[in-house]
Length: 313
Image (cartoon, rainbow, N blue to C red; front, side):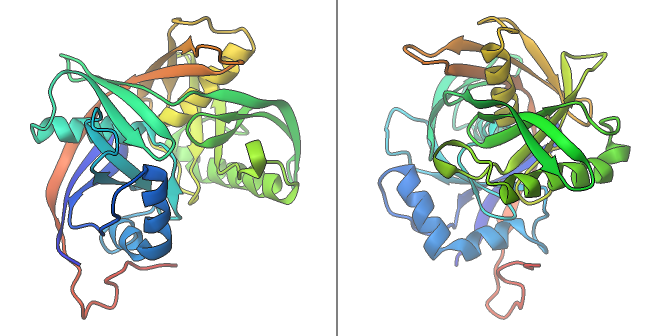
């Protein structure tokens, strides 16, 4: 495998690593098909990029690809320490910031192709980035799950580019000091969902848990546990999209109305939505945030390195 050129960034505290070159040849065709090839034939690439000694559990990777739709500025596949993501909100903001840093795109609107659909991203003059995410919706309302050691927990099941179980109310304050307790609480909910066979549409696994509480500085403050048991340092773009879908379904947020979503670090995304044409309850969310480039370089994979493909634990 050739040296892999990368650019690192963070969006509201959550890191993204964009692989610009040196990744596996996935051929052409739909991003969903190329994701399948990556997962089944080249998963060592994902592990080498994300796992120690080159990465960490919190890092999200983004493989930059030629889009199938030539009207798109880029194609991208997102991945993390356990597998692959359909969409990634903070990652798309980080991708746009990276491409702007490299001089590959300027201010204005751009289309980004992902395995779950095309999203629109706008690079503003003030360097903020807005993404218009894939259509999002609430799948089930007020679902009760019995969590061992906790009791009954009620939440909504919603799609925002990934499947979420959204819970109002946290057992402790949502602060970095309580991250271990929040992680165990959210992880126990996820395991209970699996054991009780509570899923998204067509049996899809709910692999993101979002816990929210009121905030003095925003409309809400959240803690989002990602599939690999690492928590999102940002307010989570797909999680905020799922949140907007639930608010819209409850009639608590009107189209175009601003929702300010704060994450565990106190950073915030600004969100709003429009109704999808003939939506049947689906919305098109828009999320605005800021990303900062932090590093640029090459990942080297030496044949004799015992951890060439990452440390998998």
